[in-house]
Amino acid sequence: MRASVRIVSSAWRFEFEPLLECDGLRVSESPWGSEDEIGRLNLMSPESQAAALAALDGSRTYDLGVDYFPGMPAWREAGDPGYEIWLTHTPRGTVNDDATGAGGAAHERYSYAGTAISMYSHTGTHLCGLNHIGHHGVFWNGWTERDHLGSRRWNVGGATPPIVGRASMLDVAAFLDVECLPPSYAITADDVRGAADRQRCELRAADIVLLRTGRMRRWPDPEAFLAEPPGLGMEAARFLCEEVGAMCLGLDVGGEALPPEEPGAFLPVHAYLFATAGTPLIENLWLEDLARDAVHELALIALPLKLRGSTGAPVRPLGIALREGD
View (cartoon, rainbow, N blue to C red):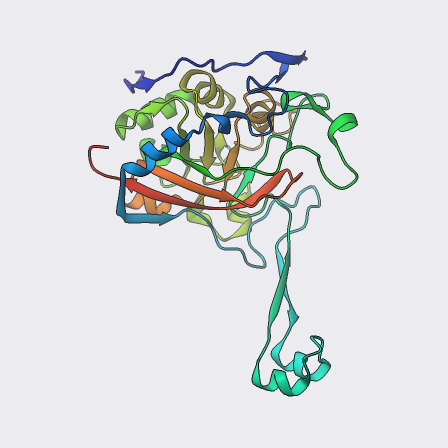
């Protein structure tokens, strides 16, 4: 039976004009103009941010990001680097080699250590940008390799503004009465409706929707966390973007169910979200504490690093519960 969840819509269109339609796939033109690089994040406004922040219960703040450490789960099947950290300066080494030029005697008194890191930009809790995946060489708003790619990075995307808004956390695992969704389980539109109805969440246009699969219970074991993950199915993605009108989505896994529902496809839900719907995606969120405390409506404050031209960026997200009645 279909759940009776209330969807609160606005006047703006949830589907956009196509720039490319080929092989059943679509790349959309941004309704926010030819210079747009952030898609649906344009739906944020001072008024919407103020409304979300005005309703906060400041006594319940949740860190929704994971730690970064060597050996952490990271998608490396295509040869991308994992997370690495190393000391560039050590206290004793700086005394011995005087790399700073301050002199060994100074560093006997002022001990100095420094670190550097390297990683694929889609590691840990991160935001996927709209220049990440496209169709037939065309990305959101008509970006192409020929016109928008530099020698080292894209010339579009990557500088994402702070994300501040009302969010609904839909605990799909709890709705289906499991600790974790089965391997490769594709979340459906009925799962979204049912979880929202059971948890009494309003799904509002221009809000953020977070979905919990329970896969974070297997973190930080790389094999257990990464193998055949559950996630969004295409039906649910279309429902959230085209019928609900979500501004941004987030999951506690890498986004979509793998292997994909569609044989021979490569991350088709990602491609739809970015190229067709203009919807950013936050992956690998820690939603366990929200689930434990049954916090389903909250304000999300997420700060992606402003990495110009990058297809992804680490993000430090905070969830702050709303006051009862708000």
